[in-house]
Length: 195
Picture 1 (spheres, rainbow, N blue to C red):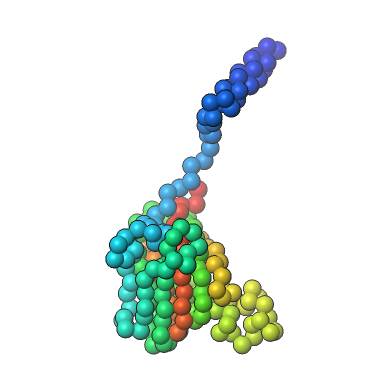
Picture 2 (picture 1 turned 180 degrees about the vertical axis):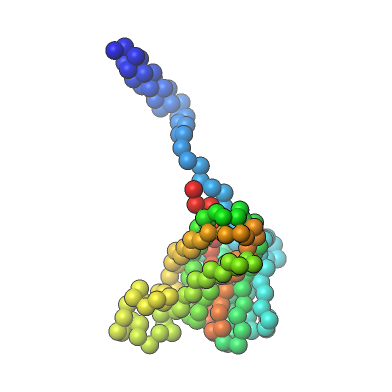
């Protein structure tokens, strides 16, 4: 009978102490680490640390960082002049085999087609995003949310992609424009293990 009362008073005393000293400790699940280096594109002088831009036709692109960010001060930006070639910000990531992961990021597509692409020896996960302004049915006949892969333009939108790594231990993450003239910004990129 007294044991529950003692536990109750001990808990109250601990809460009172924590409230007067502003020290609370929560015991819970720790969020898995973000495997992406510089997912906010904030770090780096000449370009974003951990990322490189590549294309078979570099002259077709303007790429760098912009102050039009979803979070923080900077975001990655790509402007593609024509539909001749795709171009991507890329980063290599180490993963555990046979593990579930969630890729999350913010994308602001102004026009054209964007591709979020995770690839390995056998893994091939893609997320295609098409600007609503490039679809003749949107918004007159269909809302953008009803057309597969069509997204609102000039708005930061959260995107996620969940996958199992299979036998992979290393993946390439590519964020870019996919064979279409247009412009896109990427920000707040995270790749975390799903507990």
